[in-house]
Each structure stands twice: as structure tokens, then as C-alpha cells.
Image 1 (cartoon, rainbow, N blue to C red):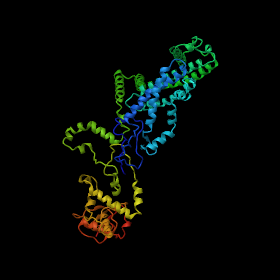
Image 2 (cartoon, rainbow, N blue to C red):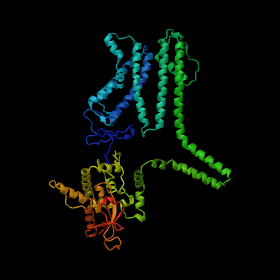
Image 3 (cartoon, helix red, strand yellow):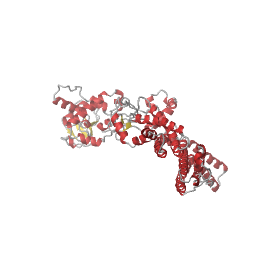
Image 4 (cartoon, helix red, strand yellow):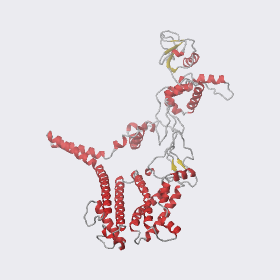
Length: 573
């Protein structure tokens, strides 16, 4: 019944729109956020910080360059590509800075759903994770390090070309970006999926084309290769010509056109072509499947409408309906599909009743209050809501449990909240053996009721009457234990649920069983107290006279209150 309030974690107010966040940040069960909940330690960056997101997006642009340059440099390294090597160092510097920056980025603990901002824990987690060695290996300039150590400006170009292929590890950032964009409601999902498919296709064409050229360049008989048959001495040709031939072959093969002008000439190229064509089968199926899904999804409504029209026409033709009725049926169906595009029912049907009521109040409150029947009425009546705000740590439902009555008011959540639910039957059973704790619960509950406003008390049955029966004297620190017990007994005069939390409701009369009801002696519905003396005191307050005997309707005298049951009628004589 406790309602601790929840919020999404923010970093210094930098998160402006939660639509782009792919996962929710919820505190662990049993925790309550305090004022420092959203504050991270000094020099710690929140992973959802807007500026950090912009930095990650900038790195994605550099990843695109790395994805193009790494296969290209491997294939054409021994040709004139020196400007790219300088650009690589510049790009690697940004990723080296990102490695350092990662040691200052908080991470989400999946067991507690809290952001961890401890420097040591962040560092240990990053170093132990696969990302750190791969980030480091894809960033280090191995060729320049070798040249410094060996003291030679050249050597082992092929080895360094393959080491540079480690930069393709950075492609995971592109995958993460597309995954985030697919969940971002501000971006078209169809456009995102189409862009992703296009990027995958372009990278596949570029990568395989570069690898195919590398095979020809390093073959023992260059003239006996796919490009050597077309271009003599291609090793000393231009980079532009070699790259154009490579892309032409890759696209023709991917599209399964196969003009036959460029084809495998040796066993190595044939094996490579086999694996590439097998890969193309899977890639083509993936692209066609995704594009078909996008097209069909956008046309589902049109297909359904056309099917409905065809069924109406068939029905009208089969039953020879007049043209006027057929037109009315078609017009109604067309109107139905047009209004369905508004998606009112689909949006509202899965929402909680409280949210639907709030939407209805927002849309129609002004219209309803201007009608002649409801002019001058209070907003509370029009909206039919009875609200007061519950703060973190507050309770709801305890009044219904304590008085054993239906909950007198409803509770609605204005924001994402975490609720601890206590079963009222289990609660009663737990309290029974702990009489002292039960009395403490009684006292706390009574003080809470006294602190409620008058408007609230008037809406809750039995509460006002219960409070009017309580003694005015409050115990002090110097009161004896006996006085405290007397006070608790006084509190039970009209509410047994406050003593044993298992209430029995009875009716009491201030006359003989067979005597007619007189003025002022109408029966009173009360909750059975703990003792006969307490029952006599309650009867004295209700009827103005103290009784000495309790009898049932059949005249039998009551000596033990534990023998009574719910809805028994008692006569106080």
C-alpha cells in the first residue's frame, strides 16, 4: 500500500525528450529516491546526457569513414593512398579520446537499475569487458608504432592492412544507432529500416569488391586473374580504375546479372565467388523480406477495405438488392474505414480507466459544464473525482481494511509509481499474535484520521462517528501503562478493527426485544467492542442510559461477546 514516487533519472536537466531513450531507468524495489538521486559524482557523465549523445553520433560519422577506408586501404595499400593514412591518424585520435572518456561515463546496474557513478567500478567494468581490448586494438596505429620501434619507414604492409581491419569493430556503433532510431517515435520507422538495408548493401558491395581486388593483386600470376584478363599491368594503373572495376564486378554479382565480362580465372577466385554468391542469397532474401514487410504493412488497411467492398458487392448481387441499398452499404463501409484511421478505439482500449477519464475530461469538460442542466455546478461534481495527493511513503486502501468496508475512494497514479501491496487478510493474521504492535497500529491510525480534513472525513463512512466516540484525553510521556491501556480500550468503543483487525458488525437496541421502537431508540449499527463494559459504554452514548444486561431477540442473555456473529441484533437492558 506504500506509494513511493518514481522518476526517470536525469543528468543536470540535460534529457529533453525521453522518446529517444531505448530503456527505462527504474529504481530497485524497496528504494525511494531522495534529493540526491539524480545527482552524479563530479566528472561523471550520464549515458543519456544530451551532449554525450551528440558525441556518440559524431563518432558514428567517423565509423562510416573507417568502414570504407579499412577494406580500401587493404586492397590498394601498395598503390598511392598516403593521404588516407594521415586521415586515419586523425580519426583514431578521436576514438582514443572516446576510450578515455568511457572511464568517466556512468553505467546502468541491471540488478538495481541505478546508475553507478563510482570511478573504480566504472573502470573495472570497462577493462574486464570485451569492448576495452577491442576498442584499444582498433585504435592503436600499429604501422607507426612498428616504424618507430624498427626504425624503418616501410615493411610488412600486408600485415598492417589486416590489422587495420580491426577498425570494423566500430560498426557496432552504427548498429546501436539504428536500434535507437527504430525506437524513436520522432523518426519514421520505414525510413530507418530502408536506410539500414541500404547501408548493409553498400558495405557488402564495397567490402567484397576490395577483397576481390586484393586477391588479384597478390596472385602469383597477375595476368591470370579476373582483372588481369581485362587490364594489362593493372598493378601500376590508377586507384580509380582498379576501384571502379572492383565495384562493377561486386554489384553485377550481387544483383545476379552476371554479364560474363568479368569472371573468375583461377581456383582461389572461384572459391571466393562461391562464398560470395551464397552470401548474396541470404542478403537478398533479407532485403526482399524486409521491404515486403514494410510495403505490406502500409497496405493492410487498403486490402481490408477492398475485401469488404467485394463482399458487399457479392452479397448485393446474390440477393438482388436495389441500387440504393447497395450504395448505402458501400457508403457506410467506406465511412467506417475512414473513421478507423483516427484510431480512437485502438488508442484508448488498452489505457487504464483513470487515464481514459482524464482524456474525456480534457476533451469534453467545457462542453458539459455549458449545458443548461449542469450550469453553476462544481467541478468536482462534473468530473466525479475525489482527489487528494499522496506523497512518497503514503498509503492507500488502509481505511477500507481497518473498517472492513469497501474502499471509500479510488486511487490514480499521475506518474510512473512503484506500489508495495499488502494483502489485507495476511495483514490481519500477522497482527493478531502481536497485541502491543496492534495497539501501536491503532494509535497511528487514529492520529492519521484526526489529521484528515473535514471534507475528506465527510466522504468516508463510519470515520466521523468513530472519532466522535474517542476520549479527548491524549496520553503523555508520564502517563502510566494502565492509562495507555484505558485509552486503547476507549478507542475500541466503535471500532473493533482497530483492536483485533477482524471486525464483527452488530445492531444494538435500547429497548426490550418485543417492545415497539420509541423516538430516539432506533437501532445503531456498530462494530463489536472487546468487552461487555465497552459495549455498555457505547450503548450509553447512543441511547443516553447505561444498561446492565445484553439479550438476543429470542430473550437469551449474552455473557461472552466472542459467541456473537456478524449482523446479530443485541438489546441493551
